[in-house]
Length: 539
Image 1 (cartoon, helix red, strand yellow):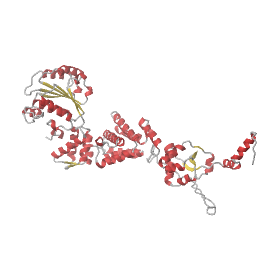
Image 2 (cartoon, helix red, strand yellow):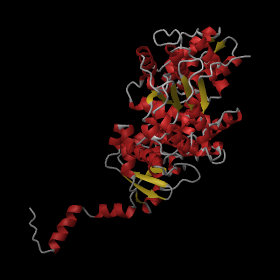
Image 3 (cartoon, rainbow, N blue to C red):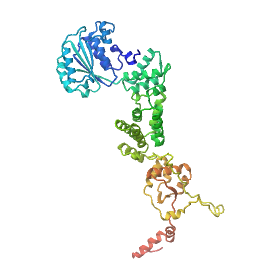
Image 4 (cartoon, helix red, strand yellow):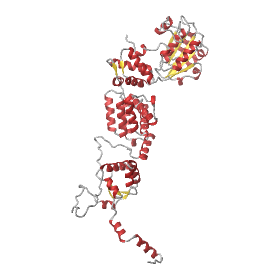
């Protein structure tokens, strides 16, 4: 019968355990010194070696010929513990034996001396599943056990244990194994199996396993069945059901550009190809965490699990995105992941992507921060225009900027109208109202180009219906004749106001101009002084 890789390559010695030196070195020193405790508590995330170290410890305390704290692995006791024939080493699953009766039977049995071994060892896995009554029954025995009994308790949730239980044990905390250590172990296992594995593939498996060696070997088992002598990163992505970094980069780009249509289409393709939405949400959460670290740290180092060209692509993506947008995405995906336990996963992902692409639809603090930062910095789009077929964006009209004056002999007698809907700027100016948001638009333009901002310094703008009329020097209008500058001005107006205006020059009403021409301001001042009885002496 085929034996799973995590069982076939389970460590037999303390020196074979990967990534837990704080546990293995201490246990070996205790065994060499003969200071064996009566109760041990192994805690940590799943797949980090708790049960493995418990079995090695059970062999080491009963080994007939121990070597430097490690069991020899060849004596009858070591072989008996490995194949389960030594009844003095008992492994109990507390999840299925969590009642007080099971614990009372164990306590009664522990009173008998071992049949073959030196110590009777009880390994209680997932001990946090025991009932309160079972814990209370175990307390007295844990405090004063028989001299020939050793208890090894293993749990992934130590916070659920009673403090009285924890205080009676020697506690060892198992850490998550570093991705580099897991990848090195996977490469060694593949070498033993006669397979070839790329470094990127090994790192991808290690990151997916989230610090658990058992999970990494189980995932490798899935890849081996598909591989034809070589395991690549693409094969891992397909076998494990991952979306892949290229899709994650696409999602980040679409969120940055506000392209919700493309994001939803990409999500639909991944869904139809069989990708699990919960796993995809976890991948995006981890991906945005990496972007956050790259954005805030000069060198995140091993905190970001990516190498080569993939890491460079992530660095470029982090450089393009604002930190507020990254934090908004990270918070949104974490919220979606927690809601998926009770909601439709696909719908939850679609809602999350829409909120991220259009932050004005999201009222979370992260979305508001993102919008405020966009206003303060300028030049950053608050919300993308929809690109769906149902709501095509309305093309922006050409600005109605007058051409520079030409000599009379070169000017045509009749100037053709600029389209069927040409409107007199003088008529528009007569009903125009001051545009209060104009200074904000100039600030946005100044962030884009200081020279453009200087050209519009001291200018004003007025609104008349769908027209935005600009009162500025001729130099500013010369700049607006360039298509790139017109597009930038339109974008700035849309960013600040959320509306699209047609651009044109402001011309004051004729009566105001004529009034200004009829009477000089100095003459008006002299007239007012005379009316007040002030004598004016002319020289």
